[in-house]
Image (tube, rainbow, N blue to C red; front, side, top):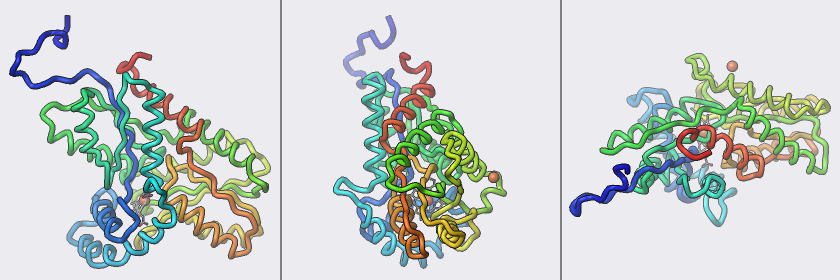
Length: 342
Ligand SMILES: C=CC1=C(C)c2cc3[nH]c(cc4nc(cc5[nH]c(cc1n2)c(C)c5CCC(=O)O)C(CCC(=O)O)=C4C)c(C)c3C=C
Ligand SMILES: [Fe+2]
Ligand SMILES: [Fe+2]
């Protein structure tokens, strides 16, 4: 007989315990594609010291006085172009990924999802999981490549929330999976399927990753190297000798130097060197979002065609594709080892 089988005294608070849970986390997104919601979201996101590594005394006046007075309107217009009836693509896809994992992992594990910035928050979902009896939680930041600005800040936030709990869950975290054969094979299978379905043959496959300030590379962030490794492994796994591969970094923010080459400049450079047919994939994003659907698939396409390119295809992220959910299930089962019946 375990303590759980014993009868509790009548005045004892209710006990619900013994389960394992998985919390999928992605970056975060505004509640609505309007300037006020985007402002709230950006204020939280860009005040994170893991994201903008400038002392508050210098940064907060720039953020409050300049960025939050100009950017929300422009970003809201971009969000409006990709918003769906169910909400922001990033939130909708992350929720569907969690639903797919719940169906695959079964009732023995509780699967939930959260956003690092905005809603549903990590704190709210961790609390709900604890209340549902999850004494063991696998925190899964859905970033294939590690960076302090993404992966680490998810763990920081979970730590902040746990600090407030009397009864804490045991915590595991999903490591970055940039070179995990499960990830590389899933990307290769899914991108092959999409390339085969195109009505043209691209000359170039551009692999576009979210950028980071170049300084973070010199400070020891492994993000840049992990992006390049994903690219190399993906090129090998795709095995398409007729296709030329190229890696670039998108979404530059602020005045500092960011990782290069930039995606927008690379697209124009390709046209200048004679490329007319291109496909772009974003293997640093687990789910399609503003950066892939608007910046690459809309802005990138327009710029490429305007410069003289003829065919442009933006390929989807793994999202809830067969390859994507099969990969996620295998990775989660591996990380849950010993916590669930295999
Ligand atoms: C995939 C990894 C990501 C890294 C690394 C990353 C670093 C990073 N981002 C900014 C600034 C912004 N990013 C924005 C959107 C955004 N970023 C990621 C992912 C990474 N960011 C995603 C998935 C998204 C999309 C969110 C969505 O709602 O769809 C934005 C907001 C949009 C805008 O106003 O342009 C900003 C700002 C910095 C400064 C940074 C590294 C230091
Ligand atoms: Fe970003
Ligand atoms: Fe590197």
